[in-house]
Each structure stands twice: as structure tokens, then as C-alpha cells.
Image (cartoon, rainbow, N blue to C red; front, side, top):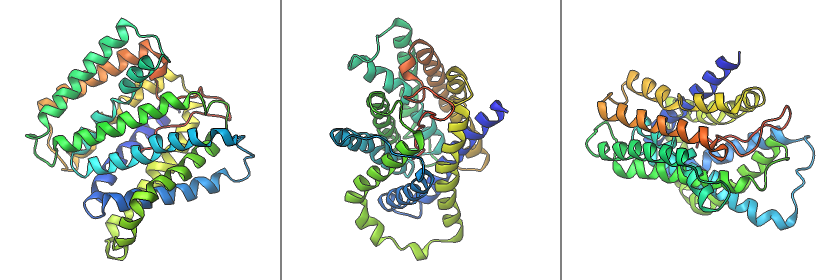
Length: 307
């Protein structure tokens, strides 16, 4: 049951790459970032009702605003913008850099002790990302260097969130915490994206685009998040880390199978190096694992917003 749930979570996240790619061809990235954030915030706020106070002190408000900026606003926008200019497979591999960025930032800020094994994993993943970036401009199928760099920026933003969140989120209800972060993130996104959302011709979108939008919010965000909470409360972190590495494989299988792009040797080399590096680093550094809070029966870990 746990294995099936882990596969389901990664599949839900993987399909989100295809959904975002489809939506980005019809909707302005700024407008979609606002709409998705608004819809997800509403659903999460409803889920958080009746769960008791979060226990947030006024002195923590600025820190939580920064967490929302990194973990929701920048993370989501750079992911959407990047996928408008690259392929799902490239985005899937680039997002695997999250634990690598997390390890590097944690070492730089003194949150984690560096190890040879960790840095070997960083170098392997760096080689995989380099292969990805070098293949981008000539890969065809819509992959560009700029798009890959935007998704890598998304990964760096979320890594910063993971490092900072360890001091503020542990011990708090996960659903209420995520709801608050989503609402604060919506406030940040609104500052830049509300005009684009107002200009967007929402009534002119086709039925298939609306279907992808619905999936991205209900399936790829809320559904994947809730299922992941259930999994994280029951599965060892090491097992979760292994299954996270399956995500780019599922993305590539779906993307190639549905004709979004073609398989290539450069993509396979990049994926192999990056996954190997992630597994080496995550086995050597607990801080590089997928979420900042240890799972518990009722307070599970927040998960990456699949932007």
C-alpha cells in the first residue's frame, strides 16, 4: 500500500509538469501563477478551518513572509515561467537539484556539516545538470537554456525555503502552516501578477485548458499534497527520497509517450548523473531530504509545492 501511494504521489506530481506546460501555451505565466495560487489558497484555507490556532507570534511574521516568498511565490512563478520555455523532462531533472541546493545552502549557513560523500554527490549532480544545460539549445521540442535556468532558479528558491523552514515550521500543524504560507504567497504573487490576471481572457480558454487548470489545482497541488502527508507519516524518509528520484523518469515516460518531446542520449546521461548525485548526497546529509519536518501521525511534513 505504501509503495502504491508513493508511486501515486510521484505520478500526480509528474502529470503536473505536463499540465503546466499545456497551460503555459494558452495563459500568461504571471496570470496562471496568480490563479493557481488563489485557487489553492482557498482550498487549503477551507481544509485548515477547525484545526485550532497555529501559534504564530507577531515577531515571526516577517520570517514567515520570507518563507512564503521563497517557498510559494518564487518557487511557483519560476516553475511556470520555466516550463513555458523548456520541456517537462528537462524541468523534472532540473527540479531534482532541490536537495543538492539544500545541502549546499545548509553547509554555507552552518546548518549542516559538509562531508566528502555529500560533495561527491553534488559534483555528480552538477555534471548531470551541466549535461542538461548543454543539451538544451539543440534538443528541439521546445527546450531552451533560458527555460532550464528558470526551473533551476525555482529549485534554488525552494531549497532556501527548506533550509530556513527548519527553524519555524517544526511542531506546527502541517495543513495550517501550508495554508498560511499559501495565503502569504498569494499576497506576494498579487503584487506582480494581479494586473496580468486581470488582463487575461479567461472566458476565451478552451475546455481542455480548463481541464488542465483543474487538474493542476485539485490533483497536482491539493490532492498530491494530502496523499503525500499520508505517505510521509508512514514511510521512512530514505524510501521517500528514492521514490522522489522516480519523478523525472515518470515525467519523461509520459512526455515522450504523449509526444511532447523525443528521447535522447543526452537526456538519459543527465538524468542518470543527477539521480545518482541526489541519492549519494541525501544518504550523507539528512538536511537534503525532501521536507524540513519529521513526519508524525498528525503533524506530517510540508511537501514541495508542485508549482
